[in-house]
Length: 268
Image (cartoon, rainbow, N blue to C red; front, side, top):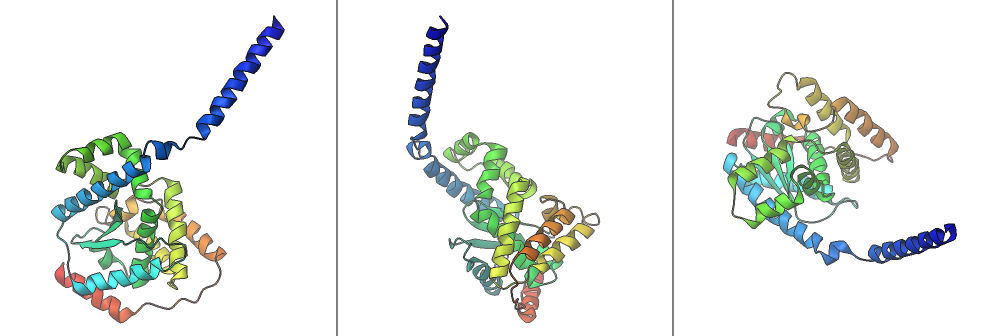
């Protein structure tokens, strides 16, 4: 009897291992076209969410503003670690200190962030961080986690829905990424900055200052509320910088920075 049970067990185990091996050979993502579906979702969500923010905020459109931010972006994307896909940057009028990435390779800056920043290197640091979120696929990961891929697919299968987009916008602007994703974005941001020859210490100074003043301006300093505690973050970023090879940093033009801020202030 025991021998018979043992043989049955071996047969069951053999069938299980065979099925496990066969199923492990199947590329489910390809067979179910999951990647194609996610690309479609991201494409539609990107267009819809951009339309939502352009409806809620007034866009600052100025050739020199676009050119300046485009040059910062190009410096960061020159890094060997960076994906060279085209990224669009939009500046919207608001007193809030905030920047965030949208699906479909778009980054939004609210103009209050430029008022708060004290140097172009600080803005480059924020841009590097949001660029890292885009290039590491964090935006869609967060939306899938918070909303669910089935719900997202249902949303894009229908018509433009302002209320649904408002919920998605709330997730994009006000919900923190997982700590692991934030840590990964910080790691890549520091790499982008250092390879671009931009001093990453300015980004640490920005985080430190915004952490010190968040109690004074809780509504305006929204960017810090969607990220890990600034003191912990600064310590970790400093460790990354200390572990990196020494790099010669060339200061970004203060004259162009002041001109950029003056234009944004005038239009805002």
